[in-house]
Length: 190
Length: 139
Image 1 (tube, rainbow over the protein chains, first blue to last red):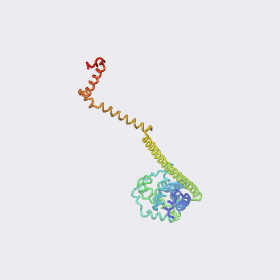
Image 2 (image 1 turned 30 degrees about the horizontal axis):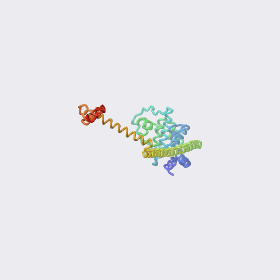
Image 3 (image 1 turned 180 degrees about the vertical axis):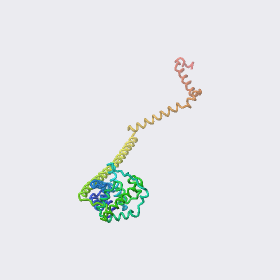
Image 4 (image 1 turned 135 degrees about the vertical axis):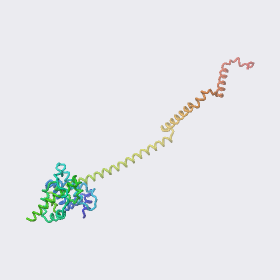
């Protein structure tokens, strides 16, 4: 069954047994994505599990509103991001405004630190090590990078999601990439 | 795991999520059933109300029709009362109409009425006539 078909079955309120099986199938497919994304944004495994659980409850509640267009993955990621941001806001720790003093000219990604080499590094490196490095980044950099690499949002979309300027987004991502590449290369050389 | 950022959920976490998810699915199923039952009841209730309203209206209509057919019934008397009342009103209105007042103010005299009054006066004179006055010689 496709994701869309599973969501349709989940949304059918008259057959709970089928809905349960559909939920299990969806969790098998995307449980890692939701939990991983929440963990990358929150950098807290325990908190991420709680938030991921809430995300799955929202999936059930809103399953009848899901428009079947083969877009479950971005829908899940948006739901996860919004839920994470709500938790951070309620804890009053959602502050993406850091010291952003940086030369604007430096923000254009150089070929050396473009998305593909970084992704190559991320794929080649040990996943656990990458996750650890990402989780150690400052909150704003970690979030901006997660929205870019995991959710594949544009810079403008990230700026809207984080309620910061486009320049701030470029700065966060520039710094995050620099930091990650440096750590990953040094790990590879050792 | 297909991507570096994904996290394999632990069995404990999976059980926790499934437990809550199944509870929610059951609750939503119950709510849906209750809502549907309530909606069905409301629908039947409204139909019953409409049917009851129509029955009462029909009954009243039949009763009124029967009363109008029988003059001894109160409904019929009431109808007559209305008719009499209307007739009186129309009469009063016509006698108090501006045309009648204008005629009396202008001093228009009804000659026929005057002739009748004179005739009455002559009858009064007749009542005062004694038997002596009715002798053959005087008549």
